[in-house]
Length: 206
Length: 111
Image (cartoon, rainbow over all chains, first blue to last red; front, side):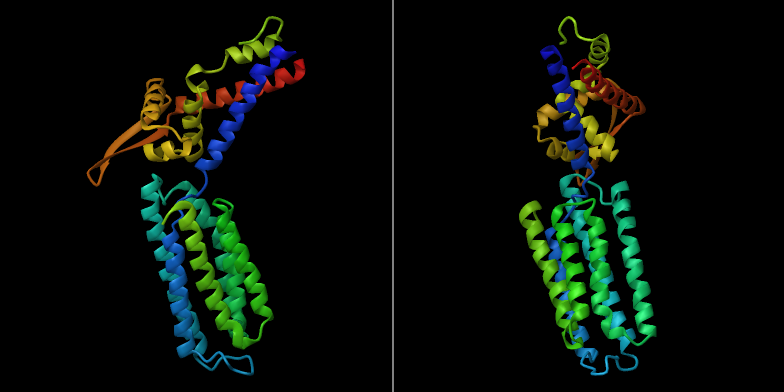
């Protein structure tokens, strides 16, 4: 039977090569360290802006009238800036590693993260309508974390860790007093992203 | 490759392996292209961890066999070549995979 071992082993080895190469090729590896750091800084700026214009210390758990649109506006602007920064940094990185950011895989990544973002938007509207806007920070972290976890299915491990950290932070934030919502936003959206950016930069380059 | 007395199914499967794809680097190139549908020279080089010269030789062989197409252009005054698998290349890759599976099955039955 030893005569059968050679072609069998070779076939198995070749199947392993095919599987590994395909996995490497379908991994969304246009990650940029700069994008993480930039998004973190944008989030810190949004937190500072929120601190200045929105009174989050309301004892009754309700925002002052008209504060919710301001809060949503600040963070929507931050999201648009962050997505733009991510796109630009990844585009530069993609060109450097010989990939295209606009690809079938890129489309899969976008579609995978969409339900969580959509869920976040719907919950934001629901919480606002019911005067629970102050509790939205934890929900945003949870939904953002789920979106990042979905992206992590197509990407490197640090992306999944980042998503998991956001989910955990979101759960913790929902249990914390309202006065700690903004500091948690700074820690999660600011700190986590900066740490992630540095980790990615060390592993894959800026 | 296979000793006398080996089951005929196994022998036939081994004999049916496409020699163009069977080579490790070329197998890697085809696998990468089948997965990503399109890749440029640098991506293939980094994914397969091979030298420029080695990759060039194997890409040329695959192109000569009609298994992939290259598109040359200039990006910022630098040459940039993108490779895509042809229909013949996709068909050959799937047939090669089938042959590998048959080898594993035949060897399993013979064991």
